Image (cartoon, rainbow, N blue to C red):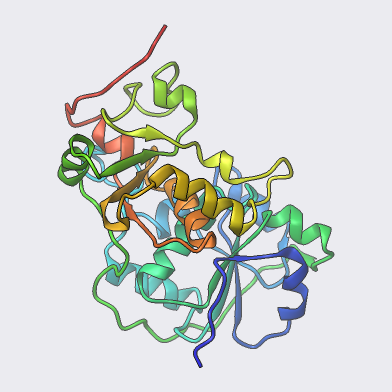
Length: 284
């Protein structure tokens, strides 16, 4: 029988896998100082993956694909090979933001090339330290791996036109996972225009976590999203955020709750807001 892997792995489980020959630990922390922070301190054996250069192919014109468009799939499979990630690898991804940033995006991308043995570490770096997983500052290297044999993304994606159609139709649902003030248009710290896609509802990604920054248990996540989506079919649900990264946190939470994976709108608000599309604000 084929083994199944929970989308989330607990810090208490990580230690027992430390010496597994197929284990690949990935630090997907993102931000200005992410690489230098990794070089100063990371989980022993962990390799670093960069959101901007390895998990996205950013264009000069952000109106085409937004701030973090997906790379071409052949470029991504080459990246995996260079990182030493093979089809047989057990990949565990963490970051310094409880899995709410690029860790979830990398999880989605690996699932989208058909990789089953991939999990996000609940609580990220802090939780691993709490459970005494070895920490290192040395340069980590891995032998190049064989290429994944895949020529298309296997998880569902939505484009801008589909989002517009969904937002106007009953029994379809567009979910915006950004913070409420960004959704409402009260503030916009990153993109050029504040507001949200007309018809989209707000379900902030941080509500997937408890007060300790850990994912809610699967039963609670299942109840939360079943209530939100009600009778809407998975293929009629689109998740988006600012640039197609944090949306993956909510997709990860839904998968952890045992629900089917809905469509991801990678371009998200960063693409939509740059294309003269309708917007909605509730500014005071």
